[in-house]
Image (cartoon, rainbow, N blue to C red):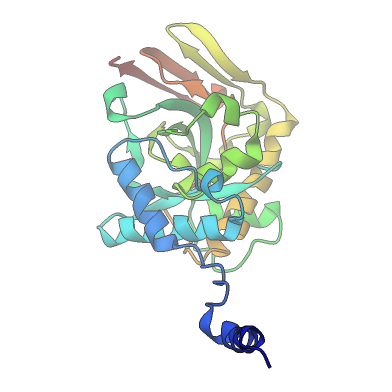
Length: 283
C-alpha cells in the first residue's frame, strides 16, 4: 500500500468522528421574543416583525410570544379586563384587554402617548356569568352577556409599513398577534341592558370635527357580532387557557375601519346604543 493511499484511508475513517454533524434547527426563543415586544411597547417603538425575520414561524409560536408577553404584564400587577378579536371571520385572531386600558369618561387623548394612534369603533359585550366551557351557540352567548357598551378602541398600531400590510392581512395578523394585537386603551360609553338593544337597529358613524370618517349601517348583518363574540370566547380565551369571568368585556372587532388618530374632535355615534366623544391633541 502506498503512503498516499494509506493517508486517504485514514482520513476516510476519521472524518465521520472528527467533523461535527450538521446542527439541528434550534427552536425559536419565545421568551426573548416576548421581551422584545415588551420593550417596543414600553418605549413606543415600532413592533418587531418576527415573520419577516423568520418566515418559518407558525401561528402557534406567535401566540406563544403573546402569552409570554401577557404573563409578564400580569406578573407586573396588571389585570385582565376582557378579550378582543380581529379580522373575524376572514382571518380571526385574538388578544387580551387589560383592565387599566378600559376607561370611562375619556375626554382627551394625547398623540404623544402613542407611536401610531388609531381610532376604531367597536361594541363591548359585558360578561355577567362565568364561562367555563365553550358556548354551543349564539343563544348561549346571549345568556352570559348582560350589557352592551360603545367601545372605541385606541390601539397603538406601531406596525412597520402599516399601509402596505393592510393589503396583506395574513402578514399583518402575524405582526399583531405577538404584540397582543396592539391593544392599548378603550374609551367606553354608558352601558345598556343587552336585552334592551336590538343590534340590527344599531348604526355606527365616526366623525372628526364634524366630517365623516366611517360608517356602518344598521341591519341584520350586525347580528353576526354575536357569533364573533362566541369565537373570541371559545377559540381564543378558553382555548388559550384564560378565564372568562363576570365584568369582563368582549370586543369582537372594528365596525367602520381603521382611522388614523389625527388631532381633532371625535364623535362616535352608535344610535340607540349611545355615543362617545373626545378630543385628540398633540402633533
